[in-house]
Figure 1 (cartoon, rainbow, N blue to C red):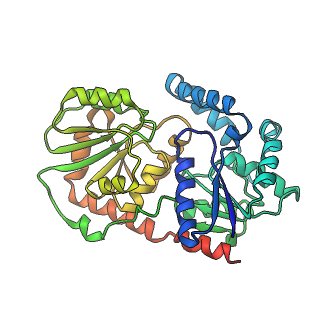
Figure 2: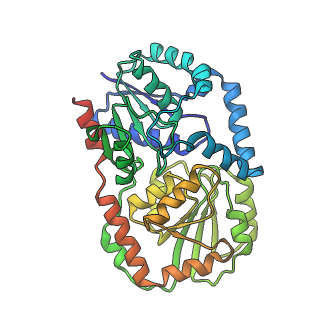
Figure 3: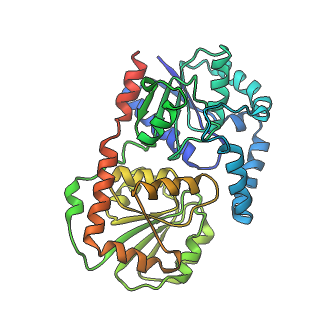
Length: 368
């Protein structure tokens, strides 16, 4: 009976936790008897400091987004184009002792990282020959920042062929890299391609997501929007109760606010009835949309990693950029253009068809 330790970071309901849950679901499909533990090393070390850090993060990205954008790029992207492994001495001094203690207590057969910080620390331990347990990186964005451990990780689940090439340029063996896309829960598989060959409709269904925290530019977007009646919006408010009640009070027949959804089955059903997903460029909602074969329209990115995700999605033509000040107009311009819709959906299907099945990759790795 194998014990598997999955390491996200912080207790915020972020993509790191969603990828951890997705990978856990695939592992359970391989063997239901696996014992899987998900541990946030920050909370394990100090719940109080973790909570304060989470609150500070939310405050900074709302109050001074330009500062957070600079800080993220300085800390995690400064050496992006250099094949060197930067040392982060503060992380080592603050977390390494606790991580070693956690590993001794859990004694896992496999460790999976869904955040760069534990990956960095584990890579360092393996480099120093202080750890022999196999480690997998499951990336949660469409790029790989410089904090992620790379050289001594045993398997990389990367989002794209571009990231395979990125790792190979840093002397990671191709045998240790699998292009799986960002892992999303196995319940999110794409509908038959015939569904997207229906044509012009009198009205369209648009699913708007602000992420599980319900933060970003959504409230401003709908404050400026004009509603033609051609689009029915379902707005995922996440845990933002204030946003939910503000939208509810508008009593707009074309705008339905939806509180935080716990059920993946319900979320999957929402996707199935959607013509386009409007989202910030995080890692998870766009990846779920790609897996479902649904076009993506991007709202303004939050500072930091979302800005880099946006560059990738637009560069690869996997999404369209929306005008926040004329959301309805920019959506209709795309939805009523049959050629543009078909072209984007074809690119999306080709993108996902090239990806390896995560369950197969993990099963093969575990059988080695």
